[in-house]
Picture 1: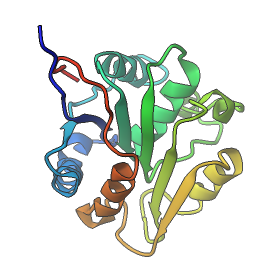
Picture 2: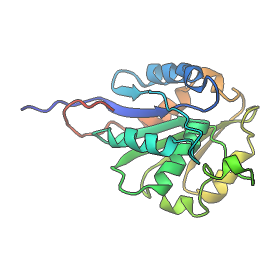
Picture 3: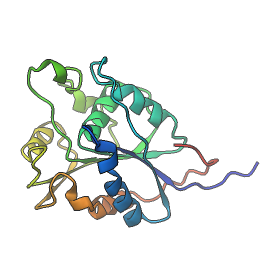
Picture 4: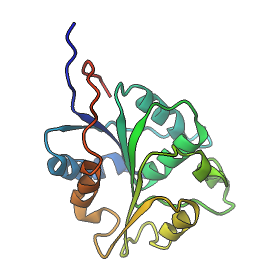
Length: 198
């Protein structure tokens, strides 16, 4: 059977909190528009399970990545972005990930009990895919996740690219054209496969 060249797949993970999935739809719409027709964004809701230390996100992320049949680009916002890092640094055997794009991720710290299951391990940076480009984006006027938390990531992941944005708040004014520009810089995967349900 003849294989078909599929669009470059982007798996987008939304932020947490009440209404996080609905709020981030505008980000996904902006990103899809800026990327164009050669890219396909998979955007499905991650559900909270308060009975689990990480609220069940790591397992759900692992399943979504596993269901992507070609090289995948990961993008996430806020809580979702931080959980991408946790998932990748604590689970082995990932297929090739072409790029990681993290928008306003909180750097979890403190001794509160609810944070213990979502905090990153001390050596998390050493366990991330070594050859995969990593990009961070954070607005200086973000009122939900302090801009200073970007420096916490800089201390751990020196090889990443950091985009410091003057204004746009926590949602980057629903404009992810800068993120799309960086994603496009990776080029399109040359893989030719049957269309997949990422």
